[in-house]
Each structure stands twice: as structure tokens, then as C-alpha cells.
Image (cartoon, rainbow, N blue to C red; front, side):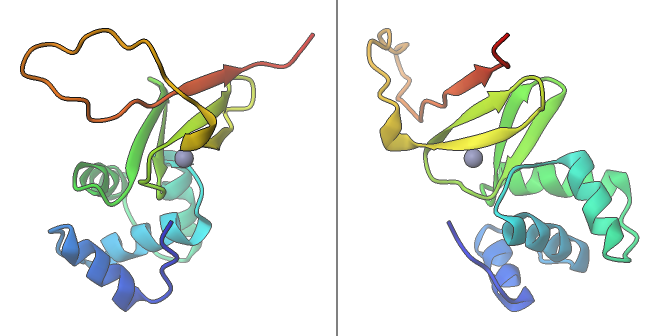
Length: 138
Ligand SMILES: [Zn+2]
């Protein structure tokens, strides 16, 4: 996982992905990479505004969508109400605790996926993402 320190490095990362590094995009990207954790759009909205800036919800959502589309971060859809933005774009899997909403990484080598059905004609495998859903034991 990248450990980006300066705004210049973040600007460069955005640039490499074809994104014009506006101040707000740099702010949001820095937040995601500084924490190296999975954040929802709501988390990002809350955190970016505690830094004393005023970034609108629309800007946060649009920026996260753009970062995911361009491959700067990965979108993890744990359920339709819980979309996380993950600065770790290397192949890996996740535990998702349905009670707490906590998403935790599982390294790629800890899960082997076998027995995939034949792929449709004209398609090649892009990747397999596993979300292991957890709930508390009774
Ligand atoms: Zn992850």
C-alpha cells in the first residue's frame, strides 16, 4: 500500500491517474491514504470537514466516485447501504461484520477460490473479491 506523505505526492498520484489535482481532491485523497483504512462517503464527509474546511457532500461523493473510477482507490460494496473506499488497490479480500459495519482486510493468499464456472465467451477474469460476512456468536 502506498504511504503518501506530501500533498505534492498526492497531486502526482492523481495526475498519474488522469485526475486534475484540485485542492479538494487532494484533501480527500490524503484523508483516505493517511488512515489506510476503509472509509464510507459519510466518514470522508465528516472527517474532511473536521479539518476545518468546507467541502460539500456532493463534492465528496463525486470525488470518491472519480477516484474509484480511475483506480486510485477501490470501491468495496459490502451491502447497498455500505460502500467503502479502500486505499489498498492490491488484490485482497474482506471480513465484513454485519453488526458493527466494520470491514477488515484479508490478504489475497489467505483465500483460494477454486471451482469457478467457465467464463462467458469473450470475457477474461479481472479478479475475484470475497467478502466474508460475520455476525456475533450467540
Ligand atoms: Zn481492503
